[in-house]
Amino acid sequence: MIARAVKSAFQEGKEENIRMLEHIHIIIYLIAAALVAATVARLLRDKKRRAAAPPPAQSAKPALLNFTAAVCVAVSILGTAGLFFQGQALIALRVLACVIFALSAMDAGVAIRRWYENILEKPTVRRSEFILPGVAALIGFLALEFTVSLCGIPGGKDSALAVDYPVHGEWKVVTGGPTALTNYHHNNPVAQNSAVDMVRSQGASEGETIYAPIDGVVSKAVGDRSPGGAEPEGNIVIIKDAKGIEIWLAHLQQNSLLVQAGDSVKRGQALAKCGATGSADVAHLHIHAQKDNQPVPLLFGPAKKFLLRNALFQTTP
Ligand SMILES: [Zn+2]
Image 1: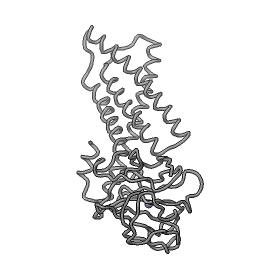
Image 2: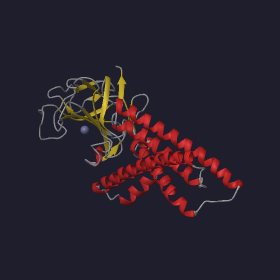
Image 3: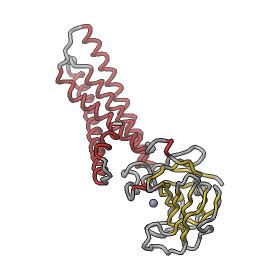
Image 4: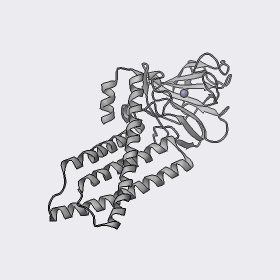
């Protein structure tokens, strides 16, 4: 919500502004991680001190605020890690987040005990002691909010279009999601903000059959372009549905089209083969929906999934 408010303040369609905001987000994220590290270091130092001498009177609430921030950052690390890392790196980050969470929980336990002792005795908390932990908590929430903003459907579920998966088998999303951080297509142009590029999870995608994701009429079909051509979309099929929403399926293999402009198509009907025509380094399918040059987010399959970067999905014919 905070990010959305800041974003709307920045927004006049300026791509640099949006990218700058996302860079600010990364900086906030790094500061949050540093604060969590500082909390862990403080816990270790306190433990040493307690071993050497009886604990000095300390405030309780700052530790609680640090705890809140640490939890938010841990959740944020987990959420974001899934978008950027896979396999071993993701497991390592999950373990790290669990450790941070456990240390923070211990910190909170100590804090609650001190707070109780403070009530029994006399208050020893100074106002200045709240400033840094307050900042830590705020940054923690921003980090959490950032993670949510990386996953949300732009305009909400109601503005999205439910479609079938255009491919069969196990596939992986190379780029997709609502921000420039996870989606190369963002503002490139605006109509492709929610575009998804997908490849087969194992082996080459070249020659895989592409199926119609919706019922509709083919409004454009070009199939004779060779790889690396001047047109960025390469060979393309555009299907227009009853509401006038266009689905673009791009980079199709040369001379593989099974439909032509004006054809009516049904969901699941074979359209063409996957290829690497236009601006495509490797064979992949580009899919996006748009209406009046505005992006329409896509929800795929029976589970209506909004596909983010690194998402894996399995479909059967
Ligand atoms: Zn693409």
